Length: 406
Image (cartoon, rainbow, N blue to C red; front, side, top):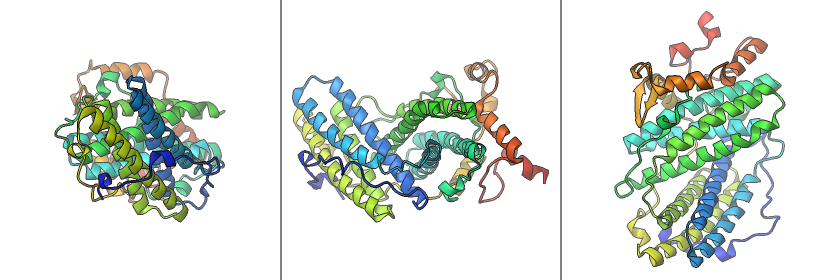
């Protein structure tokens, strides 16, 4: 499908009443885990679109552009409210968090598997191991606080075991800035991948920034605080991959095109008929918003959208599916990687006076919540929580101490 050939729903027709903005939530006990992840991702995509539109609005004095942005932004707010309200009220923040980390693992792994640019693939692989570890830490917190099993949420579609330990993920800020692709030569699929992961990680960062105070337990507050800092690193890491030389109007067109691609993707795989109808409606809305953005680009910059967009959507939709073997391969091969400026290097190659070690000494002074949560859960139930469906951990040093003793 070429979205440029589709009319879509006119933006003026996209406003809806309050009942429409407050749909019936899914049942957290019955929902497909990947329906939950699709809801989480698309909420993040809409939030990114809204925040980008606000920033664009603040950086132009063209009244017509500002008015058109306001129209499409209001429509995005409509979509965001619908998507976010699919989350049920009895789904706790920690349960939602486990969903966020399942998104991070299986989205990042899928993107990396399909990424044509080796530089971008490496960036995805690197952060994948860190989000994988976060899922393991939160799963242990889930058991520690309430004796609950995280596999009731993940349904064993995503393994739960250590990744690159969060304690070693804390890097000096200068070592989270990557080089960016060239907007004139980048594969269109790469651009879509990067925009998607930036939005997804940004939404995770936003969520963790705001939910730690909801917990009474110091260990929970500390865990969210520590992992939230890594999510900020990830947003810097991924955000630096975007070419900053694209004009605001070109970025607007790329945002709208990516939203079309993602709603089309979600539509292809959704198993819940009612939610599938929402993806279908939102796809039609996004095509209408894309047409507005393309018209602005054409009239104010003299650029035909077909000059910067692919002729049709990618053949393969972004798909939530198990990535167990891929994650295990990356674990086995990249667990010791660190960053040095824009480069990735084995830990052993970092000079002893590298800023990484100084930053580590500062932030980890006195211990870390991500290590403490494992220690406390192990002390409580005489083991740590894992869900290793494919056998022993591929990294010997990260195997379960209980299995090692056996």
